[in-house]
Amino acid sequence: MTQDVQRLPYVNASAITDPAMRAEFERAAREGAPRPESHAIRAHVPAVFWSFANAWNDTFVQGVCDHAIKELCRLYVSQAVNCNYCGNQRSLKAQAQGLVEDDVLALLDFDKAERFNPRQKAALRLAEAITWGLESTDELWQGLNTHFETPQIVELGFFIGLTMGQQRWNRLINMGHGQFMGGTTGGLAPAAATQASVAAEPAV
Image 1 (tube, rainbow, N blue to C red):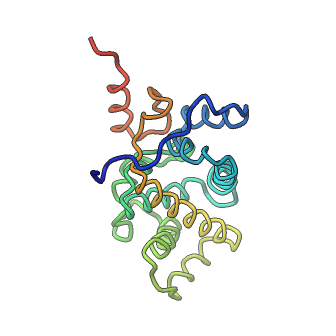
Image 2 (image 1 turned 180 degrees about the vertical axis):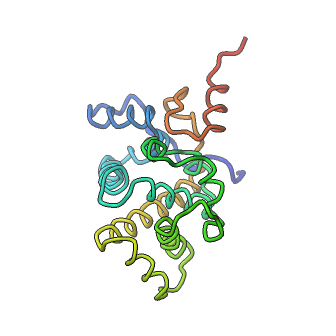
């Protein structure tokens, strides 16, 4: 077997009969982050599906910490663990709050990038420390405590851990976009959305 073969099958779409689950799949196709493919793996076990979906909504989409900062951390993790599936997704809510593609391109060198403010850098240092298993330094915590309240740090740390674990898992599965509920491009990065649109066009 080659390394890029998908290792787990998607749930059969006809098996998704729960109206609430179907609504979440439709939201994922429309808005992304997460996209339908990763949902279609988790849906083999409804408890897993809802555990993730609820935690994601409560701590990423909603929550007490800035959504756009959490999106920066999610995308930092994507680049750090080389999860192209997750890295090609974008939060529309974060884009509405001002996140742009140039921010994404600068993430791995965030400490040197002038485009990120001290609050964003403090959050990204936490993502860096969790992702790479770095030491718990006074500098790290001074930055966090300067720019965030304790509940925000708790949520940020939990979310980074959640998305890091899920992204490592998605990478092992070798999923690709447009494979479940194909033809939808909600929440895809510009280049990935273009590829998905071209793939969905009928042959002439």
